[in-house]
Length: 404
Image (cartoon, rainbow, N blue to C red; front, top):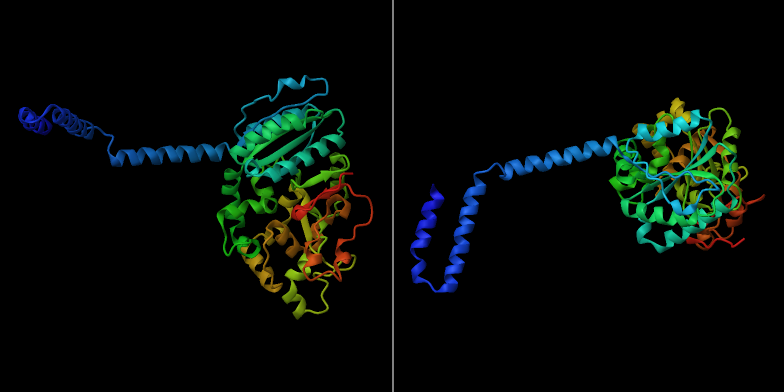
């Protein structure tokens, strides 16, 4: 073999070198042998590349089929809290929902809540907001026998691990049954991106349709990516403080008028008076951007009731998701936003208010006053005023939330 001739030539010169050179030459000879030997195997560049691609394909296939990481714990008032999480190892959408469906058939009624929970491990501010939200939800939460609160968190892996630990502490004094479901943010983004890519350039902070921005449009297309057995869900921001039973919010679904698919509160700052400035200039008599009660101030997405069943069956709503119709409305209203789903709902709400049920402002009492100090102080209170009881405080733009 070729490599034996190389070794022979090397060994013939050994006597002319000192001992330390002998060691170096022996190492070189072994390297040559190893190169020839392993080079004759099938572990070459082409086969290695093929193996990597096969591994990636297998990983992607598994992730598409099993895009939920589910940790579930039914907490009973008389259960010892030291037991911790019950790891059920459910991997597929169908399996996860089958377990809940079985509970439902046995008489359980589930109330589904979803929150974004990404990069929380890197932000002490988000952790503090989450703590306030969960403690206040537990404090005021009350569900009937046979009812379960299902908490969905869209999360990255590091935040998920942190969330598990925090929830064990924060839900220590809960008096109702609950389940926790962590959704992989990457898997959901993969599903969302083809649906919302066209609208991102109109409603994202960047100058294009960034892939990672797709998750900010989750509520827009949730009816397409969640299983059909999930028919209603409430999406909530993390920076909330609850002053009433979260179960009461779900009763608002029963107030939806025919044709409505989403329950949402109005925006309580002149954000859209500003954003629609060009359209308002061209249409001086418009209600667009005007304050309540007669104007159309736009929406705030901090608290949203999503009737997924109605969203699926609404021909009008799904038509508005088509790229050509998104572009048409954005051009008609001279609209360019940066707040994701909130901008989209606001824009289509100007044209089709019948798609929305207006929640009382007390269900999303926004506290941010940024626009008061940036050019709109004279009319700010027309937007900011909220009469009636406050059920949920929203500390948007990092505004402190009252202690009461």
